[in-house]
Image 1 (cartoon, rainbow, N blue to C red):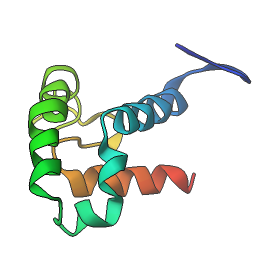
Image 2: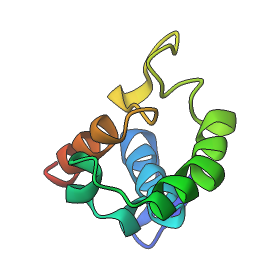
Image 3: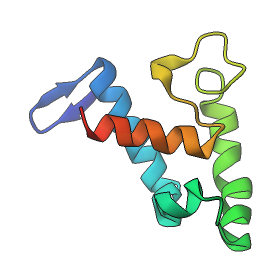
Length: 94
């Protein structure tokens, strides 16, 4: 459970908050959503993602958030940048 100023955050709200925080901390936001969706990341951005971010996702997230997960948790895929960004946009509208 994550503590929030309004009290404990649980369930879907907690998951959204954690995913958003992880993505920001790991630099996904630094790439800019339009550049990721368009596949226009620079070589440095791709290298950073592949060497610093993807290994964390593989170790801690892909078990529940990848195409080959037994059950896709919260409908969030972290192995596909476009799917990840679509999910983030959908969460912003809820």
